Image 1 (cartoon, rainbow, N blue to C red):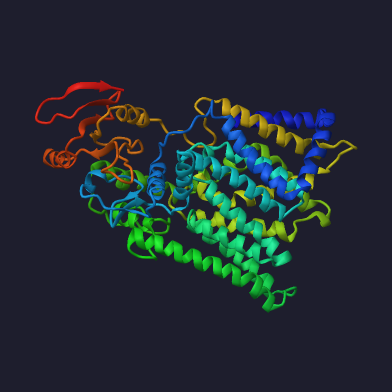
Image 2: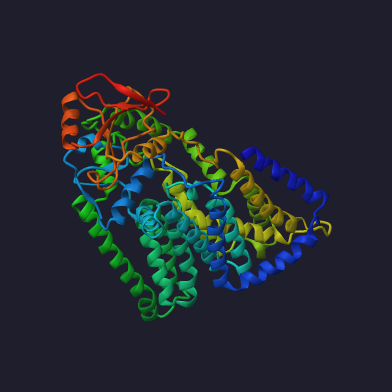
Length: 560
């Protein structure tokens, strides 16, 4: 994909100098209609959101509803199942040792290790439409609409609408819209906070402060660390404005900005604290902290030392936390590891197609007309992106959606650069205009190419589909409830994990459990008396599913 995009960029650069007026008669009427829509700000936001939903729905025949693969996805789905049944968490199961797994805590309660935002999104899809995927679908529509709304506060409506279009093409068609892993929640939170900031400073309407509070709440419950760093930058800008030379009357700013913002954050803090109290027993302790204390050896930040190894009940879990994660931690502390993060993030959020206008914009602002040099708004966006990205460099682990709160700000910087080069001409030829049009065309073309690729992959390492969903579907076809005991080989790939269960384990049609000693397995089987018992050996090629040998040798193997 990367090479194809580079090829498109190279072709565009050649055409820019050979035929800069190419297809101008096609673009001009479209641009007039585009500008007319952009001037209707609220309508533009809705069009962006609905277009995102329509595009993903139209792609379902090619990109069907995804199956969960990554550890975190199963954790989020557990939270969704819990919330969909009207509970905040679940009691610890009497046989919980058999059900221990990744991204889930078993004590003091049974729940996902993550903050609740993504689980709530998936729960909405499950309750309203019958499947968690539709929560993902709704979230990417809200994300693109929120980014468009945010950009309207920072630039002209036409460029904001273009940013919404780029969000559809670059973000909604990524794994953010094709998995349960998240990304949209953090992007929505960041967009609401950054979009509210210029509106608060311009009009001081309480509604803008409330929207900022909602955005901060979403960040706290999706990407708390990255969101906290971003919120510090926003808070500094807000207080700098309130106390600066052009400050508004203190009573007015307190009444219209500080009070509504504090009310929203206080209510959100109470709700979040109550959730944490129900899950962990303390309103100040995250489920993630419980999970790390229970299992992890690797610390959260690279400057911290490795923890002492806790007691593990299962070798496969120990292998992951004692062997796999420390290797990633060591890489994260190195210059090559940090370089890989930067390249990976650049490829996802910017890529070759958006790099050219970004570089051109920087050059024109540094060496061009002084009136066109970087303004205060652009400097603030650079500061917000720089401080948050710098803070993320100290995290021991990194995945692309960790930076999702900066999605809107990154697009804003790209669009600012495109604006500065849009009217650039040389010898009377509109090279800048052609480059702007080429960016959109290439983004559309890359969306088509990525969609046509089988399997679909976009700037993210592919995770092997290990057929858990297929076997689960077969087991659910049996009339009786099933119990599957999973037996792994030593030193296997711990990313392909099979033991994940519903929120209400006893009521589930299929229960997945870890193989332990014969006596412990017999105790588990007695607890689930009346279930058909299977032995699953996922490390066999192909995966081997057979009747569990209750006092006899294996019989009736069924292979997948």
